[in-house]
Image (cartoon, one colour):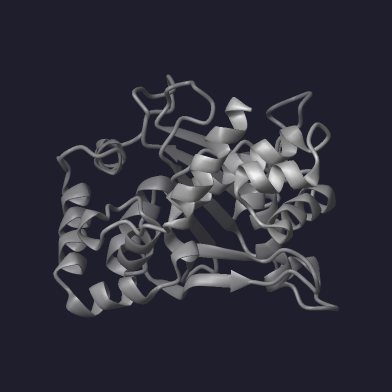
Length: 291
């Protein structure tokens, strides 16, 4: 019963739907990240630091690009979707809340990008080189590394590579060290430190900080933020709902519908919606269901 009282209190606080004040936004908030990073002059240096070469020209295809993967399937919204002059695709995502299924999230984003590129009847050769970059505000593997790069290799012999031209990279704002022999630049470290809430101490971090200040000084941006749908931007609300989803999942076989509705202070429709999401999507974690 103690757990259910906590759930009731949680749902009551969630119903208030308090939006984070505009002046308190940081680069890790979705709205600010998308606003700043969809400017080519802000995102290109980041991509150049990661891939280790100059990019002559990039084009931000659409801010927060929506990709629908098919009828009645789960679409995605990409924070920053970029293509360079060599037909390489870059998807940069801010992950400000811990996701247990991070690897599957990578997999789904990659498949969605590929399906969006290839038309029916096209040869697979039309697929473009791609980088999916997640910036996490937590260390997903607890190694302490600033960066975790991934590509498809043979598990029997790591020198044998699939060469699928798809790379996935995690930048960890909680990073404290390099992987020996795979050091990242001071600019990347400075950016990650800034994203972790510290004073900007690198040229790139200072540029991002200036961009954030300009957004906050822009009345049009302020009005835009205030008019946005809450659930599209407020990660804290998603976090609160994920805890309720966890309670429903754990108590589903222990309590009656009437008790769950009453003590969690939710509607029968809400309860049924969560149950259907869990049943139809066994791979989804609590955050996915809440989202």
